[in-house]
Image (cartoon, rainbow, N blue to C red; front, side, top):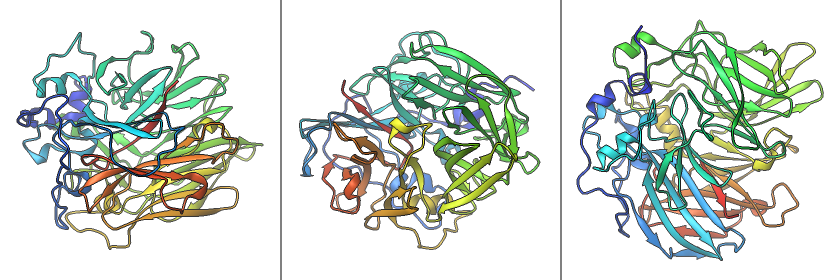
Amino acid sequence: MAEHTRRRVLKGAAVAAAGSVVGGLGPGAFTTAAQAAPAASANSSTPFLEGAFAPVTEELTAFDLEVTGRIPRDLDGRYLRNGPNVLGLEDVRAHHWMLGDGMVHGVRLRGGRAEWYRNRWVRSSQVAAKLGETYPGQVPPDDFPCNTHVIPYKGRILAMQESGPLPYELDGELNTLRPYDFRSTLSGAFTAHTKYDAVADELHAIAYYPTWDHVRHIMIDRTGRVARTTRVPVADAPMMHDFALTEKYVVIVDVPITFDGAAAEAGALVPYIWNEQHPMRIGLLPRAGGTTRWFEIEPVYYSHTLNAYDQGDTVVVEYIGFPAPFYAAGRGTDGPTATGSPALDRWTVDLRTGQVRSSRLDDRPQEFPRINESLVSRRHRYAYTASAAEMWRAYETVDGVPPDEKFTNHLVKQDMLRGTNRLHRFPAGAAVGEAVFVPRCGARDEDDGYVLSYVHDPERGATDLVILSAQDFEGRPLARVHLPGRVPLGFHGSWIADV
């Protein structure tokens, strides 16, 4: 089989079909008008191009944003969120949501004010060409406008993607600076879902690539360099979107979504299939070094990690899972297709018996789980998830037939100790994005802080940055920052605190 670059493997026919620049676009375009979204149709085969998902067409800059309520004065930094925002698409048949050009949306908070809002495309070579700009420097291998996550790392802001591309470094005003290779120590693929152990000051990743016969555990130490890369053999080139980390183990989740070379050769947009012949497994790789121990489990789609931790002779992994099968390439729509709603689940791996016990923690539809980030790899009590009605309808729409109207918009605070939860509800049409927890300055309790999320305001046709008190989760928002445009439903983000 011919060698596959990311462009050939994951862009497929989209590279040839993607068209010219939307007229008049340019960096720093200024407007205060809300950007209207095409209404979602119940019979559409492109739900990820409509409604709350519809891409915006301009880069906005606005200052001194209007605020309802009061922004806590100790919120000093930037709230950033990444997501796919396709640019210059001429043929909708060449669209898949996960392949949209990355756009980062940010709000700068300081001294109780919302100083600015900006949204900027990540300037890969492809995006720069579409915008009529010159790409500075040498184009990296597998170049892609990273669309999945944006994180702080040692004073830098990194936009992230899985399976190939280097992260792109952004400056504090969301301008793209350069590809970032961790001080010239990273080669090969990386991931969008890193895990940062704050106590050890280590950044961990599990990277996969379509032509590899293994996945790689990458550990970046306190110097900001790749200190160790461990190759873990796996069959069938599975798509490992996320993983987990404990104090003792790297938790590798081998899912039955695998690379299809024939589909790639035929130009498939996303040449990954649900493979019934590929057993699902959990692998525990000792962080101190050693051999991965595998445990077979019943198939699910492991979407996102909440957290994991060691507990005596067990390893506990809490995550968002979709029922099997899950179709990453979609079935009749322009995005992933699920056969049921995602829920919050737990695996408990017994190291003595070799058994894995599965349990359901909360069966309401929810995604994008987050915790107080200082507790990654250690036992936590509280978690935060999001439920957007339009997302579940898009995921479960097959051949134009949407599911029922049972879904609502809300954020969830989970209390893992008591097994209870609290909901902060939003109106119909108020599509809600991932919730990020920010500790209060001087906080002593795990949940002493704020929860931030982009939430669509259907009355304005634009988005608000909603700030909740984590300890008064059901109460009125502390503040709503009114943005000048829409933030389409997307993926993941972070609070980037000023140092």
